[in-house]
Each structure stands twice: as structure tokens, then as C-alpha cells.
Amino acid sequence: MSLLDRARAGDRRAVSRLLTLLDAAGPGGHPAVAEALRRRDRALVVGLTGPPGVGKSTLTSALIAEFRRRDRRVAVLCVDPSSPLTGGALLGDRIRMQRHVGDGGVFVRSMASRGHLGGLSAGTPAAVRVMEAAGFDVVLVETVGVGQSEVEIAALADTTAVVLAPGTGDAVQIAKAGVLEIGDVYVVNKADRPGAARIVRDLNAMTALNTASARPPVITTVATEDEGTAALVDELVARGIRRDGPTAVADVEYVEDEAALLALYGDAAAPAAHNGHSGLDARARDWLAAAALCLLATADAAGRCAVSPRGAARVLDDRTLVLPDGPGGRLDAHRDVLANPRVGLLFLVPGRRDALRVGGRARIVARAPYLAGLGADGEPAPSAIQVAVDEVVLYERWLPDAF
Amino acid sequence: MRRVRVVIAKPGLDGHDRGAKVVARALRDAGLEVIYTGLHQTPEQIVETAIQEGADAIGLSLLSGAHMTLVPRVLDLLAAADAADVAVFCGGIIPPDDIDALTGLGIVRIFTPSSSVEEIIAWARAELRPLEVAE
Image (cartoon, rainbow over all chains, first blue to last red; front, side, top):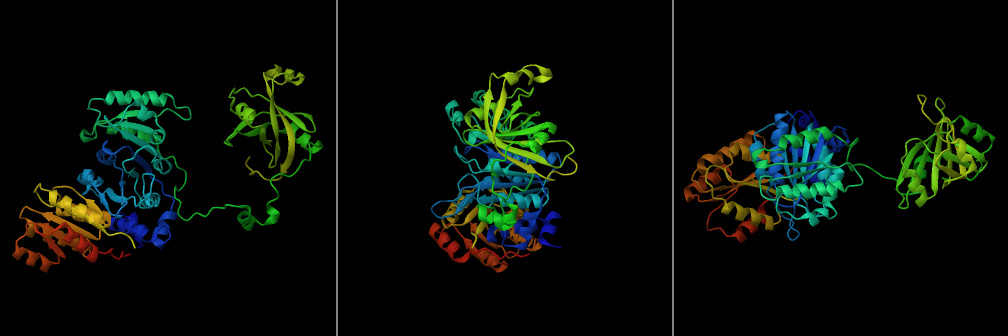
């Protein structure tokens, strides 16, 4: 039986040895570790981060207890700082978790940050993968006590819980950037202490100003009394496993330039990105007449891309087409076009395996004779996106049969 | 080479952990990664902790007089867990006769209240090494 098989069968020494081998030789240094990192098992990975002293370890222990009540196997990785002077470390997080030591469904491993900034150690992401491969249902990752910029955990965890407690700072601290931007869930621990209600209020005020994402919940706990932890676990479970593939970084090689790309595909398979202008010839016009769906790609001034669905296009001449506004009413694409006129369009016809790509420059038209018949049910459209065509590319037999 | 990992534990019922904390701090300053378990640990908890943490050594702090019961128990549990290669050292109030007896059982080093922090650091640097990891 291999080391990984033994770990998956519940042998805790095998789990420990995998982690030690990972530490000693790196992600690719031992076959059993490499095998573990290739597996695609998923656990619910929860990050707990926040300033020192807010009770992260005690809360982690309470979460272990609550997940165990729900019969989940729980692995914990606790990261504490290494001394920048000697490289040594005093890892004390597990003091708060020793009540779980005899429980065969719990495995706690302490990790020293070893000079790695960001709140984790360099080996933490791969260690999470090892725990997932070893068959744990939940992996709790407790970061070092963080200031304001140790945000790596957000990229590793399905859900990042930012833990605060009374006495850790006022509303201005809360508005600062960094760790308070990454919370999927905010936890106010030691909620039985004076000042807790004010932190909850400040957090709610802060999250109400979030523009980019859904508003994160604020949950109060008293971890020493197991209060609020069931509600927190409910929230974590409801949010679920959000990563769709291995988080890990192990064993991945990236293409960084065109030469490396051509080495994979060969020159012939990779024509120049922009093919030059062939105009909207008769074939393209026939194609556009049949296309019922257009996907419009835009980018804002900073180069952040978006794609939005449009209906059929109308061809004005061999270098110009126009896209009527859909009924959706979102103006994301319009704002992008105002900031950056470059657009890409992909036209699709249901049942056909080819697709037509058009590249060009867009403008928003407020008044034009052709708007009259462009709206829904023949009404005038309030505006349209007019595209000056720069390139036309037909993708032949490119889509899957089922489309 | 990876860093040496040491579990520092207080088995049994005595509640005086200043010595354990001083040793933990000294080993940190010696460049080791020290996992501190806190007070009132059973031998079973200590051995399980050492296994989960991948410890190369265990330091036991005993001031209660129960060392002739608790220390051999830790050694037995390590052997039963296929972890007899983990080095075990002790500190505390341990009479000379018992020091000989515990050394005979395989305890690698015993520190007493007369031991200095410098002595402990020098010993840890010289003697503690990462264990080979078995398959």
C-alpha cells in the first residue's frame, strides 16, 4: 500500500509523512507527494485571518468542534511567523486546539512562515492539496496574525473569514485597504465584550459601500463558549466549494512568450492574431443575416475585459455594422466602449459548427435614421453600438456538434 | 535541509510552565521550529501531537515528581506508533538516581534547574537533527 493510499485510509502517520516530505523536498521532490498533488479531490477550504489576539485559534478550535458534530473530517494548517533573526519559530496555535488531539477525525499541523510574507508560508498551498488528497472534508487554514496587507489566503480558500474583536481598531482602520477587502465573511469574535456592537456597525457600514461584489455577512461569535459557531459553519457550508480545480501551483508550467507557444503548436497552427481586413463580403453578409446571437467583447481603459450577449446585427455597408441594444439594460459594454473603443464580436448560428469573428472599433450612436426600426418589436432603439470593421475571420467547424 | 521541529509539552497535572516556555523560547532562538502544546497534556496527546507535527524531538517538562510514570509511558507510546526514532529530552526537578534511570530508558538529555539557557541552545544546535522520513 502506497504512502498516499495509507493516508487516504486514515493513517495519520502517513499524512504527517507526506507533509514532512513536501517540506523536505518540495512539491516534486517525492513521488508520493507528487501523486497527492495530481489528485483532484476537493475539500471545503476555509481561511481564517485577522489581527493578532482576536481569537483565531480559539475560533478555529470551535469550528473543528462544530464540523465534527456534523461528522466532517477536519484538517487544520496553522501558520505562525518565523523569527527573521534566527529562522526559528514558536508555534503556539495548537494550544487552543489540544482538546481535539485524541479525535481520529482531526489533524492539526503547524507551519512556520519562514520569511514568506503574505500571511502564509510558501508551502501552505501545496499542504492544502495534500490534505485534500488525504481525504479530509474540510481544511481550515489559520494565517499569521495579520496587519493590513496579508491577503494571500483569499486566493487559496473557498471562503475567507476575516476575524476581528473589540479593541482591534476603529472605523478608519476598517476602511483601510488590504485584509478588509478580502473577507467573504466577517466574524466579530469576543462578541460578549463591550465594543462588539460598534465593530459590527462599522463593518456593516463598510460592506454597504462594496461596489464590486455581493455584500459579505457579519457574524458574531464567542468562540470560548461555542456561541455563533454553528451559524458561521452554516454560512461556510452554504457558500461551499468554490474553486473548480486544484489551487496548486505545483507542477504547472506556463507559456510566457510566443516562441514557447509556437513550440507547442507549430507555426502553421498559429497565424498572426489579426488577419487583416477582408471586409464584410457577400459570404460574411449572408452569415450575419443568419446569425441570431452575437457575443460582444469589450475592455475598459485598464484592459479589464467583459463579454455581453447581443442580438442579430444589421450590416450598413461593407465596413460598418450596427448592434441594437438588447432589452437587458446593463450599460457595462457602453461604459467600456466610451473608455476604449476596441471591440471583438463573435456571431453564432444555432446548429452550425462555424462561427464568425469580427474585430473593430465601436461608437455609441444616439441619433441616426437607422435607429427607427432597430428596437424591440419595431420600436425605435434608444441607442445602438456602431462598429467600424477592421477584421473578419471565419472559424470553420470549430464548435462542438452539440451546439 | 529542513528545520528541526520540536514539540515542547507539559505532561501531567502540575501547572508551572515557566520553565517550558523558557526552553521553548531558547530553542526558537537556536533556530528550531518549536510547537508548544500548553499545560496538562496526557502522554497520548503528546505522542499524537508529535506525529501530527512531524516532530524530530519531544521535550518534556516535569515538576510534579511523576516523571518515572509519565516519561516511560511517552517512550512506550512512541515505540507503539512506530516513532521510536523521535528524540526525547526532559527538563525539570528530577533527582540524580532518576536521571540515570531515564537515560537508561533512552532519554537523550535531561536538563535541571541548574541548566543555563546557553547550555540548552548549544546542545540543541549540536545534537538535534531532522529525522529521515520513512515511506
